[in-house]
Every structure is written in structure tokens, then in C-alpha cells.
Length: 436
Figure 1: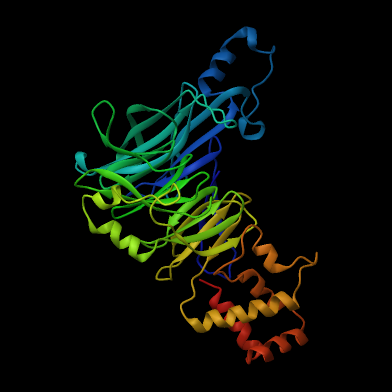
Figure 2 (figure 1 turned 90 degrees about the vertical axis):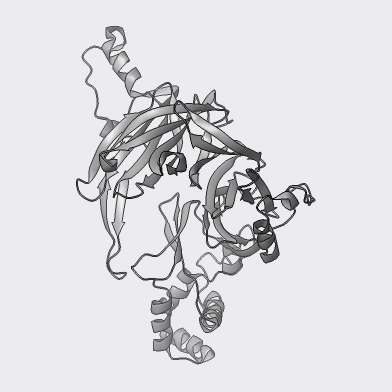
């Protein structure tokens, strides 16, 4: 199910429109120029369309005059070890429906998707989809991996298959990078250009410890998210055509999603419900951009079996929901940039940056008073809760501060006196500062 939200006024109820899809959506990308979306969908242990049609045509496998139940209500027939997967073209504005559906065959399942403008093709945009064949989720197994390339037709309303390239493992992360395709395949980062019959490999490097699950780029810098070992900063050197890791994290994080906050900072979420921001040291960042060849980075001494620099933890917050995506955006035209994240339980959350030290001091004091005056019903300490896996750092709990309006009048007056403000001032500052 695809859901499109529109936020016209923060005090009003959100408007949403639903577009039914065939299978469970896994990833979503937008056309570079047109208002169309492309989703990859897949369901495990589900019979694919060609096998369903074959079984229905076989009289020996049909149970008498049994009717075919509608899949919208009862789901598709199940089959152990089978994958049903497709690519859908969605028009969310004009027709508000799925315009085209391409089913994958040979028990392949789509795992990643990206739109890429290849410099060798006069910057024409293509849709690139990564798939895995005969995959078993746990323990992780597969028989092959592929990268499919599709051309946009009719201004993006349709896609046309061009070719597919076999790779060592299912590519779990794809992204455009300097007119080429960047793919995370296993623990290896590879750069591809578009050829007539298949993708052409241009450069590669082993940059992750376990499995690359996310890729972010800005300039010549690449942020690689590993399934178990947090993120690694990689510099691409054009003259030597090298991918060189130069900074990584101090502790393991089971990374689910990442987003670049700025050139040195990255926000991410892990499988245990934590959201964090790490930052590359300024000196290390400048050194990584100095040389176009990267000789000093290649010969730099490793530190504790990792890169030669370490990232610094800036913020850490336990959200009690597993983040599935995070992005830097603004929700209203002309508004400030925020970090928008979504969770596996349906949570949609926002991290809003403070612009003045006065606001930081005020809300820190208010949060401290709210921890004392509004304890949880079960008696659990708020600091222990928000620091479930690691101590909370650099984040003020807006949900807790908003509960100020639910306190009794006496407690409001007492907190207002401690903060040297009136109750009305505090309530107004909460409503203004914690809205986007």
C-alpha cells in the first residue's frame, strides 16, 4: 500500500490517499523530473504469477470447482522457498493508481532501487534495480545476484528492460555517484558504467566488515552503512580511480538507514530503536579532500584494525521503534531543515534543530522539571528509558515537554516560577518551538 500525505496546516488532521500495490513494498524512488514513483515489492514464501497460472492450468492440481479467492482479501497462494516480486510505476497526483507492473521471474526478488543518470549516455536517466535469486533470509543464503537496468518511456509512465548484470551477491544498496552507478555488494563497494550488454565495472574496494546496507553521497565523499559495524566514510579519488576508506565508528551499530546531515555529519538508525548522529573530525575531513590522487590515504596507518580516523558521537536517542528510513528535508515551503524518520510500527517522527542557545537552556530546564513532576505510570525513570542502550546525548524529548499542558495548575505554577516565566509563556514557547 502506497500512502501519500499532505501537510497543509500543522494543527489539522493529516490528509492521506491510499494506492493499493501487489506485494509488500520495500523501496521507493521518484523520477528525477516527472511526478512518478517507482516501487519494488516482494513477498517471501509466495507463489509468483507464472507458477500460479501454470498450476491453475493443470487440471490435476485444481481442487474440483474451487473458486480462485481474491488476493486483496485472502492473499496470494503460498509456496515454501518461492519469491513473488515486481516493480510498479505509480502516479500519485493525476491518475492516482499504478500505471505499470513488471513481475520478476526465475525466483528473483528485488532488494534495492535507484535512478541513475549515466554521464556516458549524455546524462540520460535510467532505473536500476538490484535483485537476489533463491534467497533465504535466515541464515542468509542465495544462489546469485543481479542488477537490472530499465529505460524510462513516455516521460516516465513506463519502463523498458534493457539488460541485467550478474554479480556475486544481491546488491543491497544502489546510488548514483558522479555519472555512474555505485553498488554495495556484500562487503565490497563497486562503481559501474552502462554498457551495451551489461554494466561495466570501473572501480571497487572492500570497505565494510559484514554487509553494505545503505549508501549516501555528497561531492566525492561516500557514506557506507554496514549491517553490523555502523558507518564508514570513503573518499573517491578521480585521478587514481580509487575508493579509499578514511574514517569509521568506534562502536558497532546494526545500521538500518542513514542520511547525510552535512558534509561531515551523518544521521542513522539501528535495529534496536536508536537514532544517532556521528561526525567526522574536521582535520580528517580536510585531509581526505586535499589530494586528488589519495596517496597519503592509501598509505595511512590503520588504527585498531580499522580506518586511520574515528568518528565522534554527537547525539544519541532511543526512540522505542525500529527506524526504517531517515531523511533531511523541510515539511513546509521555506521552513527549516529537519530530520524526518519513520519506524516499523508506523511511527513518523521529526528531529528539529534548535537555532539559539537560549532555547536549548530553556528546554533542558523544562525537561529536567518534567522528569520529576510527571513520572511514568509504571515508575520507570525517563533518563533510563531514553538511554536504554546508550546514554541519551544531545537530544531533548519533545514528547515529554509537550505533557506540560496536562499537568495540574499548581505544578504548572511551580515549574513556571523555577523557570522565571509565566505559564502562558511556557505553553506558547512549547507550541512555537516544537512545531516546524
